[in-house]
Amino acid sequence: MHRRAVLAGLGAVAASAPVAQAAQKPGWMSPLLPEGTRDAATLVRLPGKQPLIELTNRPPNYETPIDAFSNVITPNDRFFIRYHLGEIPDMDALKNWSLTIGGDAAERPLKLTMADLKKDFAQTEITAVCQCSGNQRGLFEPHVPGVEWGYGAMGNAVWRGVRLKDVLAKAGVKPGALEIWMGGADGPVMPATPPFRKSLPVQLAQRDDVLLAFSMNGQPLPHLNGFPLRVIVPGWTGTYWIKHLTSLEISTKPLPNFWIQKAYRVPAGMFPVDLPFTSQNDNATWPITEMVVNSVVATPLDGAKVTRSGFTVRGVAWDRGHGIKTVEVSFDGGTSWKPAVLDKDLGKYAFRGFSLASGALPPGPCKVMARAVSNAGETQATTLLRNPAGYHRNLPQTLTVSVA
Ligand SMILES: Nc1nc2c(c(=O)[nH]1)N[C@H]1C(S)=C(S)[C@@H](COP(=O)(O)O)O[C@H]1N2
Ligand SMILES: [Mo]
Image (tube, rainbow, N blue to C red):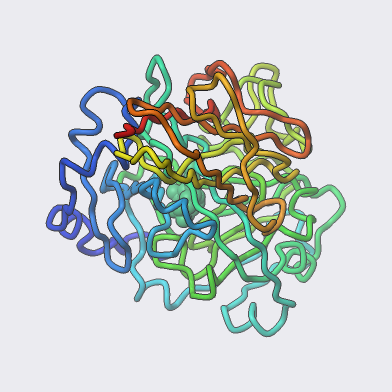
């Protein structure tokens, strides 16, 4: 539906509203990004958004500046935007939205409006991190092709909606159901480009915390974060979190689509998973699924000037749903580590805020690092786990501030 309705004016808005200042760049973009990336990037203000780092404008790919992660909840107007395809329906087109549920393993195919969804199903909420598989890809050495994300292709929000499993139950899941195929209202500019579709193993779709969300941090979903309805798959990378969701198919077959069978794959067994996506695994590669344990420092910014009385490090840590056990911070480039103070636990799929004061410091450069351990005992990588698409980078972040 609405395939031809273009996101009106995005290009024009993007071109006309750069708000970057050269002096800001050292802080909000990592010095590890490829040569030229930092110079070329601009902060752009899209409708309804605070300035985001523009990586591409059609399709729209916009990163959250790292200072946003001093908040454990990412505000809607600072939340990153990631699309694969250029044809995005505008808000008017999406007002006629509905969701169809069918497929060869559905007992009773049905169609739901937003009103049906809100009145016929119990509503629930979860706080969860949506992180793009390629977050931090731009920091891979050697560099790999793809959108050159720094640290900000992620955000944590309170999602409200209905359970996917309840909606599937209404349509009736036949024995033999293997996957839930999901499609959204956006589409390719060129008909030869495969539409962006993903699927979930049926066992995962039965989990209580996999939602169809219409609200984010107490507000309707922002247009470019999936209005009016998106899938929430806590613990799994953002690629499964289909935006502008229009179709669910309960299927006895693996989804045959480029975006799951060719793209978004990692070497088999390279990263830990609790729920393998067996119907889409092959001998050499698996679909990327569960996130890896990771942390970022939001403040101070890389390159900041601080006084000898010291500063407080603040950031967030997250994993694939076991929760964060500890975060340690180093003020001497990794020689010694101290436990950070963890904020209140907002749930095992949420960002866990942390902070630590440095105390008094000698003048000169100070190398700050952070590293997290999950409740599963998983730690951040100590050497880069290279994979062709540049996924799951979780080396401890290192930033240098100057003490004067
Ligand atoms: N319809 C649709 N949904 C989509 C995508 C897309 O291109 N189209 N991209 C996915 C990917 S790869 C990511 S990382 C998340 C990003 O969500 P956001 O744009 O709300 O930050 O949306 C996912 N859902
Ligand atoms: Mo993504």
